[in-house]
Each structure stands twice: as structure tokens, then as C-alpha cells.
Image (cartoon, rainbow, N blue to C red):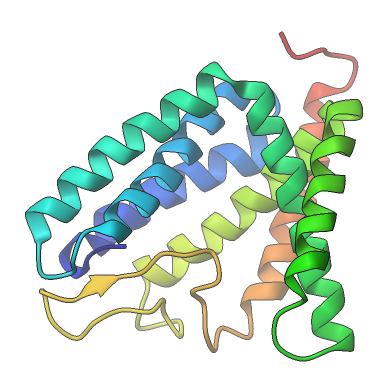
Length: 203
């Protein structure tokens, strides 16, 4: 989470990172890992600090972001596994949303995450392409809702400068347009990446 006043700068970072991941995630995989590692580390670290401590929250976000970025960049194979695990969890949630209520069982989520991580090792290129395309697409959706709050249902946000903006991937309540836009951007990103990386091997 971030202080509410930093919502617009964060939306710009989300927009740039999402576009890069969606349309060039495979070719610039380490760069994308660095960006998303920073986001993930900042999110986790800033969540530890109380919402009234704005300075502490920002410092924690910066330190956590640097650590998260370094971990994923220098251990990119872990990033590949995480992408595969993320795809597995996403599939589980999509399927469960059609057949059940609430969140899927924790055991099922863990199982598909492990299966996705293992599968990612064997089909790295396609996992990276699909994972970064759809991950970047959802980041673009979040960026749009933050940058244009009047035109969208918006992310979870406070009503004052002392409250926080929560930018979790599921923070898009009421945005009925989001799934369709996400799917469209994800498919477009996948097509662009496959077309530009065909016949090439990531170094």
C-alpha cells in the first residue's frame, strides 16, 4: 500500500511497467522482473508499516522494492517459476469463479501453483510470454483505474491524504469492464510477443 497522495505517480509506474511487460516481456524479461520485483517488494514491505506513518511507509517501500528487484533479477529462474505459479493460481481462480463461491480451497491453490512452477521450467518461453502479457495487461488495467478515477470504478482508496491506496492485483471492485479489457490486452500482448520473438532464444 502507498499513501493516497502518491497514487498518480504510482499509476505512471504501473502504466509503463505494464506496457513493457505486456508487449515486450520475453525480450526484456530481466527488466520486467526488476520492475515487478520492486513492486512486489514495495507492496510487502510497506504493508508492515502502520498507515499513519507516511515516511516509514515510503522508506519501507523503497527498501523492500530494491530487495525484491534484486532477488528476481539475480535469480531469474525463480521469476520463471513464480510466473508459472501465478498462471496456475489465476487459472484456479477463474475456474472456481465459474463453479463455486468465494475463494478456491487453499490446498487446490497451492497444488496448481506448484504444478505451474514445475511446468514453467519445461516450457519457459511460452510461460514467460503468456505470463508477462497477461500480467502486464492487468497492470495496465490497474493503472487506468488509478489514473482516471472519475471514469472508472477506481481502486480501493481513502478519502483523505492520510489514508492509503491499496494496489493489490485484485483491487478493482465494480470494474465490470476490467475482465474484457484485460483479456483483450493479454491476447494482444501474447500475439505481439510471439510474433517478435519467433525463432529467437532469450539470452
